[in-house]
Image (tube, rainbow, N blue to C red):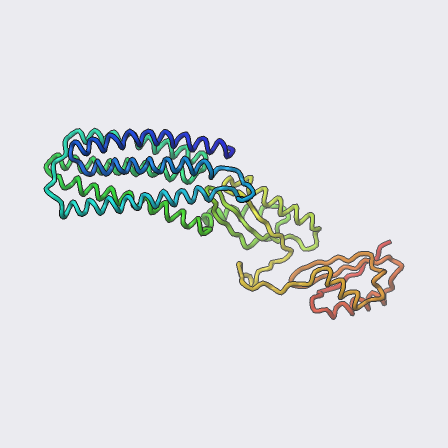
Length: 378
């Protein structure tokens, strides 16, 4: 599903939810005020907080599903994460305010009036409509893989749960226990706060680049090792980006293959992972010809020393064997296990066996040279 369609689906289901929130919230607040149920009034406020988050989700969905651009090369998934943080924070603030008000009312308030029976209608109506909104919003959220839409679905479920608690309190109140209405209002507030905290915590972990689930990482490792040409892998790192993930991995290939073959293997690793795991957005593959970990430890702070590059290597070679500079047809360098293997190619009639041995002997004095091979070309 492309980004534009995902955004459209998210906004469509959220608008339906907003209509339900306006209707249910209005009914609960009116019935609560008319028939003396503080818990139902608070539940109505909860429904209107859903309306606020609905508007916010519509706004976030508009931007979070846009394609990557110049300023956001990895896409706009963080907008969705940020939206979930705001949604969770809103729920926590609402919960704290409502809990405080009702705790004060419970211990220091006036004698409470028994709510009227019509309040039951408001609670039941809320349970039915908000549960319906939860199920359909969750279905769409999973379909388009949108964390903020899924979070909003659970916000609707929290309203349904809170209405169940309110219904229980109202039933007790009608049997002569009016204080149960206030107690249920506090219970509802705690439920709202818990759901808000869950959203906030999971999104904050994502904002600090938390890794994806260990089980998924194991599947990814197996997939990488199944690819032809990969000898081993290490330093597999991941970070979440909205409903997607970005990977970074080192793979080890055979040391004497061509650079183009090594590149092709790494390209295949990246494209295969993106194709097989729909949660993976991008993969950076580092191709090694040996295991470059320090003492087998991944993410080691100190790497092995850097070896000289071609310009410095050729400079040192010609310094040691200046008489052969014009005779060398090609120099091939192999970097492996902290050393360099040097292949020198000469025309077959340009060098004798004695000269070959002399060249090898002189180049062996360089600390970073593992070995030198001389090849003759006809």
